[in-house]
Image (cartoon, rainbow, N blue to C red):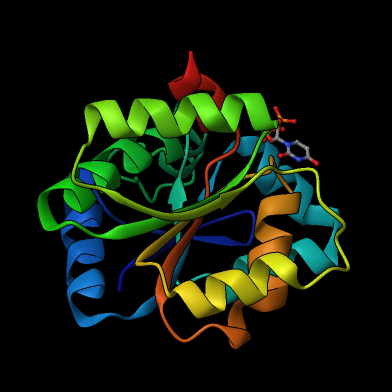
Length: 194
Ligand code: UDP
């Protein structure tokens, strides 16, 4: 895989369409995948937070979330094709899940937002199986949520906990899981819930 390094963060050289094809293949094989869509804030944060940098290193793919990263790569003489954002990928993955009847797990946001997100998914993507969900204000030391995900074996797990919590949550537990596409999507539930 071709990577482009921006301030020490290795971005996958890919278009949105290329990324989706790649993720489709992982889903077909039932692989375990960890995707981080990194914006400039994340790149800067990784500069002086060693732990956060290790979460990024654990990711299968880091994509350029935002025009700032694409511009920075261009200025460094190693252009990236385009931005590949969390929200766009979330929508594209829901589309794939709808087509292939994949199961998903949603973790994050306030209960009210989560309920509205689930209602929107049921409306816009009726064939998606929502295996489970949990709001984003839980006891970090409890293993209840990861145990549930582990037993449900969803094809995709979307975390809307905001950065850096979502990447931390995935990275700290990633070794426990045997399958699933894990991705932090920031405020995307709020956007979908409207
Ligand atoms: N959130 C959450 N748990 C928390 C803090 C935030 O689930 O402990 C949710 C919040 O409700 C929102 C999403 O994370 O739906 C994004 O939050 P924020 O805007 O703070 O994230 P950022 O934009 O910084 O990634």
